[in-house]
Length: 79
Image (cartoon, rainbow, N blue to C red; front, side):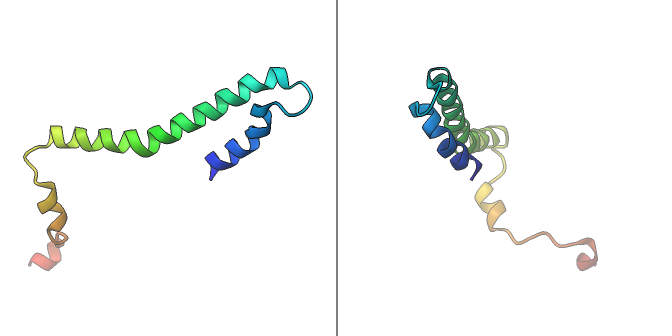
């Protein structure tokens, strides 16, 4: 939501509508570019890198078996 609001609010500034637009165009384009790149990094690159890192560090754990296993019981339930 914040991404969309920021990009939509800066679009007229990036296009160059209004007075003094020569000074505002580079700023608006830089902010929009930063928002796009940070959103893509957050939604795509970071989860992929995390998954690769976890699989490389902990190869002895079977992730599918861990996910399929029932939840652990508490100490009271075991006695």
